[in-house]
Length: 444
Image 1 (tube, rainbow, N blue to C red):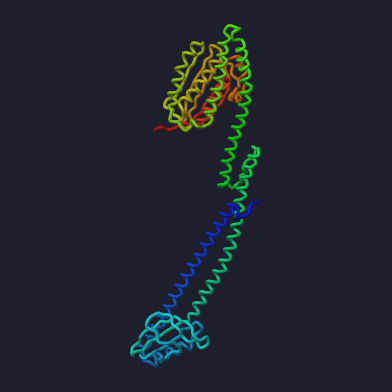
Image 2: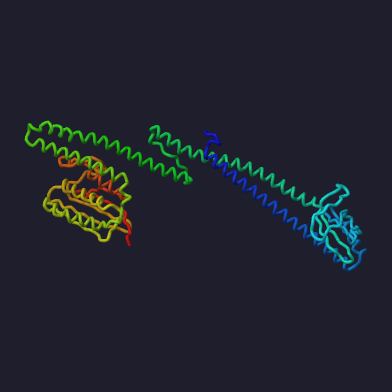
């Protein structure tokens, strides 16, 4: 297992934890400042109210009355009580037990002499009365400092707990991220070692990691299919080229000895070149590069033109070609590729059906999919070979004596897949039906 400091998963987790902890710290400081300011405002308001009450009593009496009121309040004071002082014009304290100097008018911090603790701080409010008197009401700052200390202790304990929970959560999160990433990297290492069957494990949560894993698995499936296809193509090319190359060699040996040998050798060479051209075309279509140039294509027009152009060839061969084409059907694709696919289907019908066979081309569509089919009433293909004849170099037993290399339907399948569609081979009872389904587009 990788050390946390060397792991991006743990680095992300601890970064998030540190950011969360910093946010809690800033929040706590803001709460402390706001609470302290609120307590101080309440204290100042209480000092002003107390001084106003005493000033009201003084206005209703005289100096002895306010001294008596101050003494009465000092006699009932608790530990959080107010302190009082009454000064004359000269600054002498003439009332109250608060031992301090005469302060200026207003709210302020003052120093006073505590009988037990000595010099201490207090918050005071001073106001002038008539006859040159100044009333001072104060409150020891120790009570407010005690509240502040309590807040700090509570928040400090909570902050330590938050740090502990953050570290624990970061370890859990880092471990989870690392396990999920290790699952992906482990599959990658296994595949690099040659085990192409490995796939990224998926959970039941269907989270972002599962989405990435699913995409990677789909990609690996596609790569596996392409590799299997490449192996199959390599094997098929090696097998199917052996016979035409041997024939070409034999024809070349007969050049100058047998009349017409050179022409037959050229024809055999052209057949080999046509085979490679067909393979390259299929590879180009399956590569997906052509899909970037797809445009809205009038499928109705393409199918109509191909059917009309092939009708004379079918008539000359003793076969009949009919068509039923729905109007106004458009797909996103390449006109030439679609035309080539339809041409291959009609060429197959010409090659593999006897004279007198009727062949039908149809185009119909629903709201989402366009369906093109070519059906004949010929000998058909056994149901067990329906999927096989779509593969490269695959040929039905009935077509072994006819020209061709078994790549026609393979190209049709590749073109259909490149357009996001599907191909189906079915029994036409009698004969064969090949159906292409391609997504429609709305050009309105």
